Image (cartoon, rainbow, N blue to C red):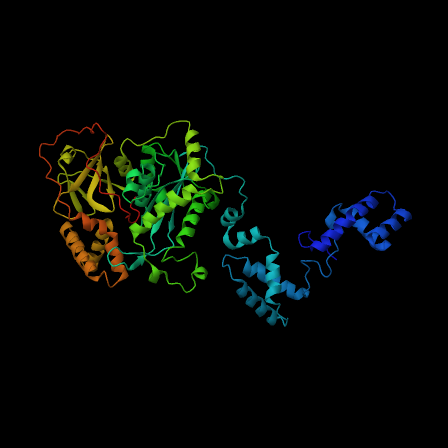
Length: 558
């Protein structure tokens, strides 16, 4: 009979063991069991002498109450009862089939064992018998064999301490998630796709620092826009969405804590962060618990999103026969507003389990603990430009050529044909009508299309146009062909938007540019611009204010 776990015994059995314990303890303390003491104990416990002697021996071996619980009858747990030849077949199959990188299922292993047993004229064991032997294997050793040492270490390594920060904006974590909700287009209110969300959280207070919602997959541009939103004051942004609750977080973080995705290791992000004194801290590879704060925030936001129309829920089992596309009702802008209300309302106001305070209250204390005042960029627009994707280009006499589009401004005459090195050129993939040239002194100069009559286009439209032109066999693609193709695409999309989801998605990606086409063209640039290296403006401005930041981004270009 095997000793039983004290958590598995019934209340009646445990009470009986507790009643026996003081009597047995007194007997166990004696050097020699006298007959009178043994008779007295038998009378108290209503047991025979042999049983009392067994209890005393068990208590002396392990002087705890659970030693007095009636042992479990039958075979001890883990006892093998199959014939030795069948056990040998099972062990060989587990070693040679189960614990391999092919990672077969339990059912596949059962079929393999049944085949080997029949080949040796043995009776195949049951599914439960094989599963019981798998459950007794060391989990870490099995995962190491099936998935590799690194993955086993990352999943099973003890987490000895949480990732912490002492004061506000000391460390901000950033990550992405695919939102569990389908959105609809602005015009026809028909479903298009699930958007991507980039979130930033202040670790010390658990306040959400900022976010960015987009139809495109995570990229360096979406990271830049999320960081710009995190650093900027939120009053005007909230007022534009008719939200009255405060959002107190703003200012430059001391460090960003990121995973190892491509967009988080982009050169543009690295240089832009260094420019503004922000350290980039990347998690150790394959250690997801180091990003626990942002992961829990994402889980909280998605849990609330499951109450929205068009939700996909967390998995197929939860969704059942619910059709998320059929019930989708929110546009991208409406979902963005809902997220903002959810953040500044319930999330910031409710007590956070991890810190025992509402994040809004924790922010006040975390801000007071800062050893120095919160830093703010001298130019918010310039901060965004510093983080945008970047390519190096020569400044030639006809200007700058980027994506087969020509750009010109009189300020380029300072470098045109005189500087033989490539200069950094930054661009906003949402709108290619303007780029920023980074001068040798670090100043950013906005440069427009050489032909100001051309409409703003996105990089996504540009690439689609080039793809279509290549399909038509146009090997040499010039600027006019690109814009003609974009215009043809827009006309086609406008006509087909009500019929197909792909067309509606394309129209939504460039909706902000369609509005921009109705704006007047900028005035002609004066010809008396300085012909020497320009000096930056006294207020630190880099040029005209950029277009409003709308939730749009494309792939990674850095």
